[in-house]
Amino acid sequence: MAKLTSESVKERARQHGADIVGIAAADSLRGEPTGHRPTDLLPGSKSVISVGIRQLRAYMEKAPNTMYFMYGYRQKNDYINEISADIAQLLDSEGYAALPVAPWGAAELTVGAARGRAKARASMLGVFSHSQAAAKAGLGEVGLSGMFLSTVYGPRIHLGSVITTAPLVTDSPATGKLCDREGCKECVKQCPAKAIAADGTLDPVSCVIALDKLSTSYEETTRQILEKQAKEDRLKRAASAVGYSDFSGIGFCGLACINACPVGKKDLR
Amino acid sequence: MAKITSEAVKQRAKELGADIVGIASAQNLGNEAEGYRPGDLLPNAKFVISVGVRQLQTYMENAPDPTYFMYGYRQKNDLINKIVWNTARMIDHEGYYALPIQAYGEGELFVDTNPLPGRAERRMKARAQMRGSFSHVKAAAAAGLGSVGLNGMLITPSYGPRVHLGSIITTAPLLADQPFRENLCAHARCERACQRECPAEAIAVDGRLTDVDCLIALNRLTTNYEDTIRQILDKQAKEDPLRRADYAIGYAEFAGIGYCGIPCVNACPVGKKALK
Image (cartoon, each protein chain N blue to C red):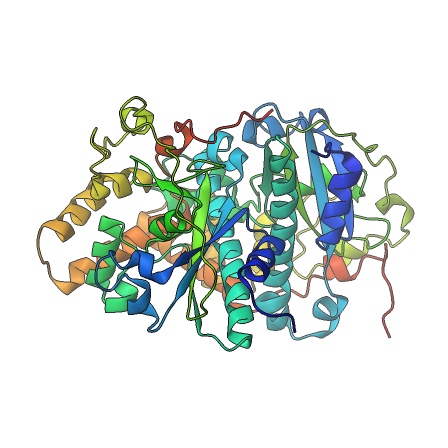
């Protein structure tokens, strides 16, 4: 079998449909919060492989909102998982531990409770920051909107990661400036939930509520979760309500923060 | 950049696993109901690519019913979804909009932007009418892949009704195939095998379908579910029982409780091959 190299790993990802792929040193993510660093999830990890696929622009810009959630959102998750799992199997068969991190996910997976889940969703905090990993892997930078901006596609990209103990040759973090934080602010202006402040501070609860187009009663529940500890019962209800909107395709805000971003925007015919 | 061509699109779909693929002009589907026309789902749609995957005959004729629902049904959906998604990706990469329409779907998803409250009821209605977001059958016939049979299904020359469909709506400039003109059903001389063998008697002699009867038999629902579905169609009912019914049907479909044996498919002589 050919020797495992950074290039062979990347080639494998591309063959499986990745539009972008890069490799970050696990150590470059040591500044992440405790519990969210590569070594917290996989002891002894050396590298993080970051992969991205582009969402179909017909879903994001043109089709009825619900179609995006019902099909576009779910399918791109499936395909990212497929790519990550395949890379992980390649690394595993070469004798290295490899942990694929799925494109969606809530921190509660690691701490385990309905309350944690509702909180994690409300704060939009995943197990692992795919955005930070992609930036360190040289694929782009984190923009004012808090989203990852790819050099080629801007924010129109969805990410997955594989954390591994394999000591792969890493890419240099991107240095160019993609996001015109002072001059542009299109994401700030066009967010219908006003969840992005002019300085880039995010209000995750407002975002998640607009994204899932939750009715007022759910909104109150979500806010309560963040503001105070509540009883388990109510939290479970809230968690299931939020999960329901996520997976049944209730609707969403139009993803203005993505569609408005001029980075990597190409007009389709 | 390679130019996007009808041939390249068809080849991609076949590489991904499609057994049949054809291209329809979006204009030819302009008579569909409002909200279900290609241009309603993707503005400026020019063409619809129709892809079909044959179901394994073993599942349909010989395997225990729940096996078909649990595995055959879901896996062919996954395969079709993958074909339409990845073919759409190729077109998107070339600079045109491409919207994959998956193998299953519910009409209400696409006409309803704020589905709460009353969502469960609308969902039930869409299911009871067996109406998806888009008619793959009409698209396939317009793309020259077959004719619409007495049983309401697409009948293809090679496989008869033993084929499952997906579609991609796109703004890319392709070449359309000729719509299918022949009526495959009329030449079959089967004396309406689908109509005679349907255990739910859901197909009338003239081909008129009773969707509720079909759905109930397909999902092998017990009498109280049947009543519930009929109530939903007949009148507005309260939120609670609707939610229960919704759940029950979802369960039947996804957990593989059973089904009617789909004789409307198995009895059709068109494209039927005897396996060894």
